[in-house]
Each structure stands twice: as structure tokens, then as C-alpha cells.
Length: 118
Length: 113
Image (cartoon, rainbow over the protein chains, first blue to last red):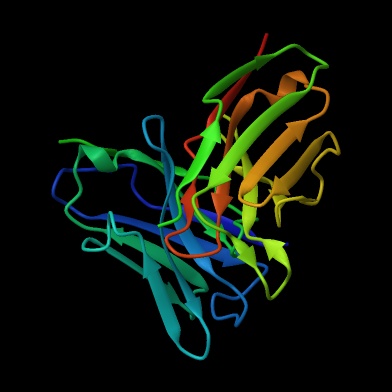
């Protein structure tokens, strides 16, 4: 049974970097059939996919155009986790952030409310 | 980008009655390798992560009650709740994972009449 456990701060100052980690159990981040996503939800914008990382003999990343210049998603195989880094945040980045597995997002982390405020 | 458009934006249905939510994709999301549409439905409740209900446009995920069903006609997709229960109050989203960026519909808020 795949389980995802998120960690990271819930308050980030404007212009600083949002950093979250998703620890994986029941699967391996370097699985040749897995995909590891970050999504966010806000009342005004609904669900928004931010990007993913996956391994197929080498690591690949896909990112949403809206955050492409500010985002990094990477995996740490030694810790079996993957992480989100979003730079230069503004109030528009206030949302609940989720990690999720696979192509159809069967398994989700518990969510982290991130508020961007000074 | 593939645009997913849901209708209606909100819906109020009596307990025990049928609820129908529609989703239209701006282009085909049919994946010929598995002969399925790369279309999923999610249920979002306050304070909980989204829950996968339907994938491959019509396959219920494990543990999802059979009152939930999905159907398709080309680029038009439908989520049907056959007999609404109180616990079904939520926001429902369709999602395509045929191509990146993965995109969601704007959501349909379902309430009890």
C-alpha cells in the first residue's frame, strides 16, 4: 500500500522559497513505472498541477508553464522521498499543497496549507 | 494545453436522487496503447486530500461505492451519482492525464437540496 507523508513549513515570507518534502512508503521513487507529482488547491483556482518527476533509466521532469521559471522537483533515492521547491513566492502561491503518485493520482499526501505572508 | 470544462459549476440535488456532472475536453484524451481515455474524476472534501473516484473514464477505484459511475462520448465525459447520499457533498473535478500539462476542470460544487 503506497503512502505519502508530507513535511515542511506552513508559513513562507514573500519573495522567499517554499520547500516541501513527500516521503514515500510502499513503493520506490526510482521505480520504472512510477511518477511523483505536486499539486495545489485554492478556493479561487481549484486544483492545479505543478509538476512531476519520474525515472526511466534517467530522471525526467515536467512542469506547468505557470511556475516553470520558479519550480524544482527532485527525488532523493537514499531517503525515498521527493521534494518541491518554489522560488520567489507571492500571496498568489498561498494554497494547500499536495504530493500525489502515479499518472491518475491514486495516492495523495495529507496536504500542507502554505500561507505566504510577512 | 488541453482545457477541461465542467458543467454545471454548482448543483443541488435531493437525497436519494441522481446527480450528473459533465466534463468536456478541448481535444481527444484517448490513449491507444491501453484503449482507454486518460480521464479521471476526483472528490474533494474540506480538510481532506482529493480522492480518486474514477479512472480510464469509467473504472471505479478500489473501495468507491457503486453509486458512482463514469461514462464518455468522444470528448464528453459524465460522472453520475445514482442515489445521492449526505456524505457525497463535495467539489468534484475531472482531470486529463493524456498530456502535460495535466489539467483539471474548474470543479462542480455538489450540495443537498
